[in-house]
Image (cartoon, rainbow, N blue to C red; front, side, top):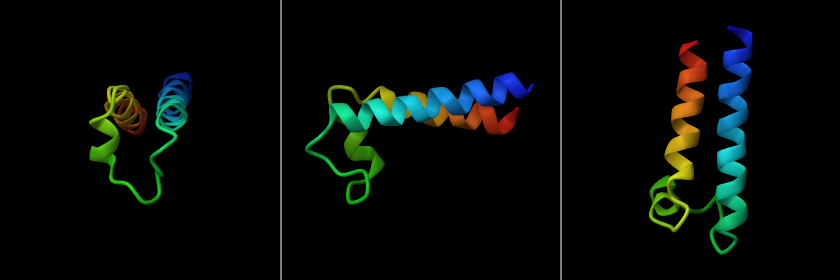
Length: 58
């Protein structure tokens, strides 16, 4: 169970970090999540959200 939680959080953090690196022109503080989803690498944000939700459920 502990490994599942750590893996979920790790995937979530990695997805958000990669999304931030790929979208340098956008600030994660001043932009909404939906703006990140509408970029070329927008699939990273839902992946991160699902990974963290699964970790929380575990």
